[in-house]
Image (cartoon, rainbow, N blue to C red; front, side, top):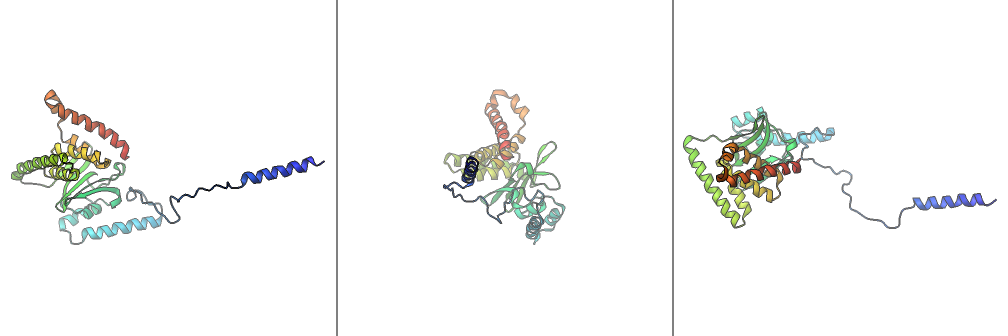
Length: 270
């Protein structure tokens, strides 16, 4: 007669024990707390999730636009209005012309210059001409703009007179040699600065692009390293180099290395 009540009671006791919390508690810091916000690198390109975020992004763009257009030269103001990055623009004017916020870019500054590449190539900023691959700023203004077009990367640089071309190429070669010496003395930042300057003076030269790419790769800067490897391959007449065979074995090795690293880095930065 007493079996059924005892059985039911035992089941209730077991159920309560199973639902009770364990005596050991792990106190962990929360990853986020109420009110925290995550600003995505591609936030300026993606549609904002809420009206408040949309208004915040618009306020940031309005602020950048005001800074970019205050006191700017008429041709640059016209380029900003058209949505086109132009030579001589400041960093703020690049943001305004491409309708982008700083967080969608990876920017490396040093020695009075700056190199801007997309933070994520999959959501690269654009201007009215096309997708932006890299912007190089020197002496306070844009000196080189690289865009991705239907036939590959297209490079635009500051116009120079005919007499300046040979002089710039010679200066670029000297800067590359100086960069090589700095690499030998383990001054990698100084070497990178020289390669940057050389690539501005001679945007078509392959050597500074490859050497900058290798340094950036070693410094774990995959976004810019990827763009530099691509610029290196663009600068080469691959068929002509391969036709020379053994005389260009070292260059062939550099080409193979660049192609291999591009495949790896493209997977990393997506």
